[in-house]
Length: 95
Image (cartoon, rainbow, N blue to C red; front, side, top):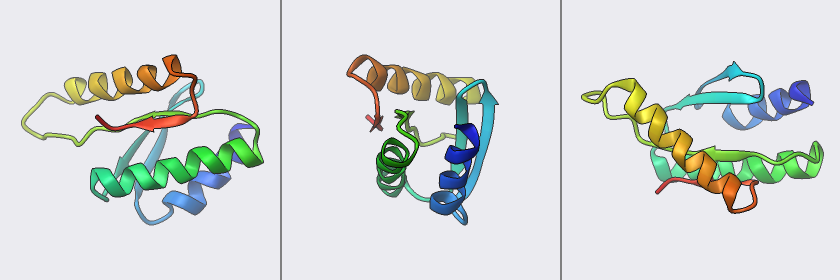
């Protein structure tokens, strides 16, 4: 399943930045597009994974502020991801 998802990642995020496996089934994406464009890409990603792999994806998006510690941005993204999971999963939250 991870290999199938990785193939979808390659297609959708090919030239948009880096997607890294964080551990287990968790990934971190560092993307160049703004938050709104990133939301559209991840929404497409969630739909495609649900259709092709029959798995759900929960995504939390934050704009990284380089004046803040990276842990702060990571924590905000994780909180948004868990909000998606609590709402039933398979979606994107950026606010």
